[in-house]
Length: 282
Image (cartoon, rainbow, N blue to C red):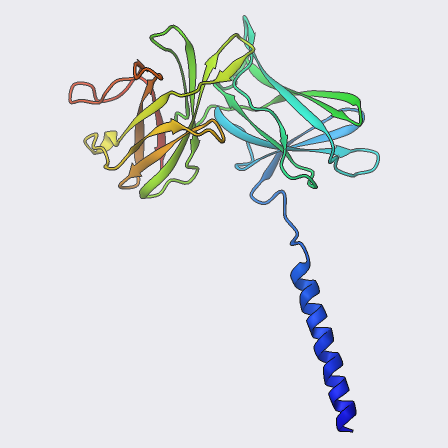
């Protein structure tokens, strides 16, 4: 009887051990759409393209956009596509594009593709943006185009200007999405216009910041760190000190690799704001 009990206990222990090992070795399921909201579907005869964003909509400025390609016949999402896109603003007298990244697969086994687009101006009653998406699956090329909504941002999140070097620049606010009373990481994109259809990332510049509260005597904040470019994502990163809630104007100066200020002014008693800036309110 004791022998049988020992055998039973041994079998139970082994079973538990195998169960534990099996559980530990299982790969956790990743929700690709966590914190993303679908804001539009674009269709052609073969596929439905689902577009996603963190805020569930686009706006004037920097937008991180994700997409999935759904096969209409099977209902499956495509995992092996090569994707590119072209945003176009249709104005009354001209058509132009804007800064944009490539479209990359988020994970090897997933269905999500991601990139970013900087809409430097909003739509209006007579002028609009559309988005053309080209993609290739197993050697077959597909395309789809649709009008997209790009309303004006509530606060200034992008500034377009001509520098003292006669180059047209676009500087776009990226993060923080949810600023706090603290020393926040701040991220900005800097681009230049090569032509109406081509915009490139600007390398090795500096973005100086001077955050102020206009409604509170235009006071500033301590310990801010000017933004320099990261070699990893090509965006500009620094530190933004916010000492209280409310509306902040982040005064900017764009400085080239030779330490020459191309646009923007130093804040003084006589110069309360720079000609280029962002606004945040929290």
